[in-house]
Structure formats: C-alpha cells, structure tokens
Length: 229
Image (cartoon, rainbow, N blue to C red; front, side):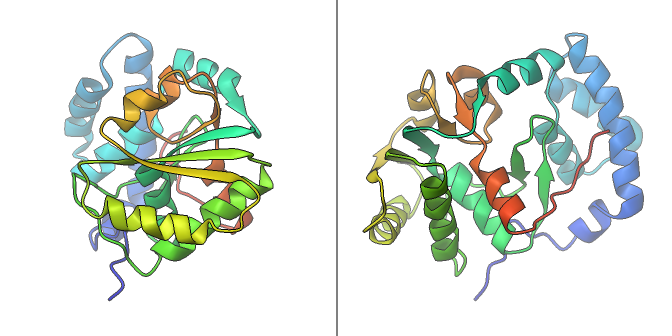
C-alpha cells in the first residue's frame, strides 16, 4: 500500500491559493518579529492565532522562515560540492520520499526544501523509499562526493532495515559509503563540513552544507510551495 509520505487530506484546504496568501501575510509579520529578537515559536503562536492558522500552516511557516542573520550565515556556508559528505539520513530521505509521493514540500528562505512529515521515533519503508535512496546516491555522484557518511537515528524504528537498503543500493557507486546508526545524529553533525540536511539547528552549527534535496527537486522538475514573501 502506498503510504504517501507526508500527505494529510486537509492539506488541500490548508494550502489552497487563498490560504497561501494569508500565510504569506502572516509570514511577513512573524519575520518582522523574529528579526526583532522574538522567539520563532512564540511569534508563530501569536500571529497564527490572529490569522486563525491551522497547526500544519504554522508548522510550514516555522520551517520556512529564518532571521536575516541566519540567512547570511547559511549562505556563506553553502557549498556546491564536497569530497567528504555527511548526511542527516532520515531528514534527507524522508524529504525525497515526500517529493516522490507528490505530497506537500516547501522552499525555505534559506533555499532548503522541507516537508511536514513527522518522524516522532517511528519510520517504515514505503514503495518510494528505494527510489528516494537511489535519487540521493545519484546526486552524491553528481557533486563528486568521495566519501559519504549517512547517519541514521538509533531510536527510530526500522533504522536497521533502511541501513541495509542503502548499503545494497550503494554497491558499485563511485564513492566510499559509510552508514551508521547513531544515538545523537544532530550533535554528531555539528562542526562537520559538507553536511546534507534541512534541519535549521544543524545548519546553524555545521561548518558548511550542501543543498542536495533542492538539487534533486530542480532536476526532477518539482516546484515546492513558498509560504513567505
């Protein structure tokens, strides 16, 4: 059965043309507040209540916005390619699964592609998983990666099965592939070069990053939604 990763029936209403216009107005208000030093979650709650936004709409806005200081730093750290690459495994593969499921994707202000799929410690392989892994490995070849470290969260269910699937798909690729199940993936990626993720905290703590999911979306003609102006 196709699980359509990240799909919720109410999204047709949540992200209709008229809803997107309201969300862009709300995003402008939230953007002003966070650039004045307000906490993103609190600003989103305050403005979201005013515009009667749903939880999914608020989450989409929160995952899309960043302060001017964050955007400046992230742009300076973004790289087009790299020899040794570190990948936030579930974060990246789930986004590609969402893309292949034709579910909702958003383009963040920093250029990353983000989704609304909630992991929360549970994960299962779906029909799109194998293609998503193949897409990721193809993109790594295109950026001339030499050594690839893919980190999967230890507490998440089926991380072992996903590791096996990636290892089998990675055989014969033109780069060394290291797949690890790790207890604290976020902190392991802090300070690393050439990190592949859309996680805002990791982007702010890594030394440099590669926007691989956006490359995949562009190559496959996918146009993510934009909820900010």
